[in-house]
Each structure stands twice: as structure tokens, then as C-alpha cells.
Image (cartoon, rainbow, N blue to C red):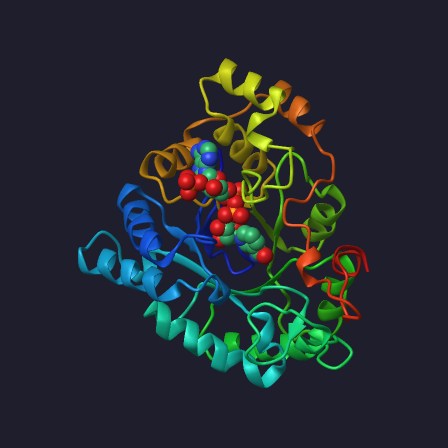
Amino acid sequence: MMTTLKFRNNDEMPILGLGTFRSEPNEVYNAVLSAIKIGYRHIDCAAAYGNEKEVGNAIAEAIKQDLVTREDLWVTSKLWNSSHGEENVVPALNQTLEDLQLDYLDLYLVHWPVALKKGTEMPEKASDFIPLSEVPLTNTWKGMEAALEQGLAKHIGVSNFNENQLKAIMATAAHQPEMNQVEMHPFLQQEALKSFCVQNDILLTAYAPLGSLGDENTTLRLLENDTIINIADSRSMSPAQVALAYTMQRGIAVIPKSINEARLLQNLETLNHTLTEEDIALLRDLDKGHRFIDGKFWEVENGPYTADSIWNA
Ligand SMILES: NC(=O)c1ccc[n+]([C@@H]2O[C@H](COP(=O)([O-])OP(=O)(O)OC[C@H]3O[C@@H](n4cnc5c(N)ncnc54)[C@H](OP(=O)(O)O)[C@@H]3O)[C@@H](O)[C@H]2O)c1
């Protein structure tokens, strides 16, 4: 199993990282510290998760305990939607760096191709949004490039961008996006987006690589799928390990979230397993284009965004 993904300048990102979405502030400190203790070197954060201060405390404690140096770690964070616009990027990143107690990020991403008014965490009404016609993604990207040029982020990229949105920023970029972080797992394989990214030297990170488990409205539980369970049983792996291994063997990074020590270890130990061609063929057939994070939360009455416009426009 490959263990890192290589950027254009040969910097290497560990292919398996720790997710921190929906980890409560009091839980995330222990999760991050335990994860670093057992060997995680890649942490996926975001201002929007409301827990960067606690993640920062855990990273600082790990460095203080000599478990790692800053250079050993790969830390990613994301620009929230209420800080789109060239002039807002560096100030938002500075807040994230202060919260994480870091001088630089390894990777900074535009979280969504959706703009919100300053101060809006989650939108409730149309006037909470700014249409992209008013703050184009190319304008926000200029702020991301400034962050890169100032050394505040070593690499810059995007998240939840479709092919056309990537093309739009690539057409005018002085620094090309190097990462697209999107939902990916055996039920959502995104082969077309993957091909486009590979052709354009854009790496991919899979979020919700275990199917997120946060959506109570779905009966489609990834880790309860028979094919995944059968492969897991035959290879002495867990269903989660099968899901993670499949995505990593496609050359895509994974950032499973856990706050549980046994599951943190189990997820990391996926790196000790390799699926066979036969397993991979069976898993490839599970694709059903199913999104657990469906983007419908960006739809409000008379609002400027729809899930369909985000994924397909
Ligand atoms: N860019 C974006 O827009 C975006 C969107 C969503 C997520 N993300 C990032 O991607 C990360 C991962 O996505 P996610 O948190 O939505 O979902 P996920 O990692 O697919 O699933 C997390 C869920 O799986 C459970 N779990 C973890 N390991 C397990 C195992 N070995 N067996 C069974 N259950 C297990 C976790 O519970 P326990 O904690 O109890 O183990 C949690 O309920 C996020 O944390 C975040 O960093 C980014």
C-alpha cells in the first residue's frame, strides 16, 4: 500500500489522515493526541468545525511531549464560506493559524464553492448568501494565492469543487490548485472527476470515506454492505478497513474521523493491508453515485445555490 501522495514540488502528504468534523471540542483534544501517539501524521481541520483551538492544544501538547516535531505533521485546514473574497482569505487563515498555534499550514482549501455573508456560520435565508456572480471563485482564489506567497500555507487547493469550477480557477490561476477534497467511498466513486484531476495533476482526498455515519435519514449504510462485509471477513479486515483500503488503492487520500482509540488504531492499521484485484473488481461495482453529504443544506427558498448547481453546474 502506498503511504503518501506526492505534490508537484515532491512534498509528501500521508495518504491516511484524521478527520475532525463533528468531533466535539472536549473529544477532539484526546482524539488528536491519541492519534499522534499511535502514528497519525496528518490532521484534517476546518474553521467551520468549531474545534481548531482544541486541535491546536493537542498538537502543541504532542510537540511538547516530543512525540513529533511540527515538520513531521501534515495539517490541512479550510476557508469557511463566510470568508470568500480575495481580501478575506489571509485574515481567516491567520485566525486558523492562531487557533491551531501554528506558523503555517501544509494545505489550505476553499471549503465549498458557496459564499456566505460575513459572520454567517450556516445560512437560514436567501440573504445570508452571496451569489458567485458577486464574489467569483477566481477572486477568492487570488486570496489563496496570496496566502501561499506569504508562506502561510505550503499548498493550496479546494474542496467540493466540480470539474467546471476547477477549470474556472485554473484558467486564470498564477498558482494551480493542487488538491480537491470531495466525498468518496465505494458508493460514490466519482470516476470522471478523478480522471479530470489526475490529468491536471490535482490530488484527491476522500472525505466521509466510511460513509460518514451522520445521516440518520439514509438506510444505505456503507459499512453494512454485504460485499464489503464478505471481503472484510475473507481478508481478516474490518469493513471500515476495506472501505479505506479501496479508496487508497485508487491513489486517493482518506481522512476517517474517529474519537475512539480502538477505531483510530484500526483505521491506521489499514495501511498494513492490500486488497486483491478480485476484491477491487467487486468493490468497483458498488458505485451508486450516493452522497451522504448531499449539499441540500445550501438550498433555501429563493437562494442562489442548489445542490444540483454545486455538484453539476
Ligand atoms: N470538505 C468537506 O466538505 C468535508 C465534509 C465532510 C467531512 N470532511 C472531513 O472528512 C472527515 C471524515 O468524514 P466524516 O467525519 O463525515 O465521516 P467518516 O470518517 O466517513 O465517518 C465517521 C464516522 O465513522 C465512525 N467510525 C470511525 N472509524 C470507524 C471504524 N473503524 N468502524 C466503524 N465506525 C467507525 C465514527 O465514529 P467514532 O468517532 O465513534 O469512531 C464516525 O461516526 C471529517 O471528519 C472531516 O475532517 C470534509
